Image (tube, rainbow, N blue to C red; front, side):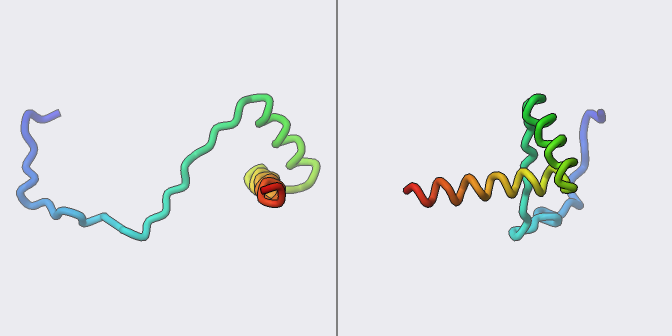
Length: 66
């Protein structure tokens, strides 16, 4: 690294996007990941789609109880 950097020509907020959406990664434990991958293969879906479907089902169940 340099001892000093010149930011005098820098532009504040040049890459800022207030509408940006960030998707946080979710890490599954190995046994859960294996189960989801196997089930997704059996159903011919990708694991992300299957996890979203399962979570949506849980959300609906929770909302119906409340």
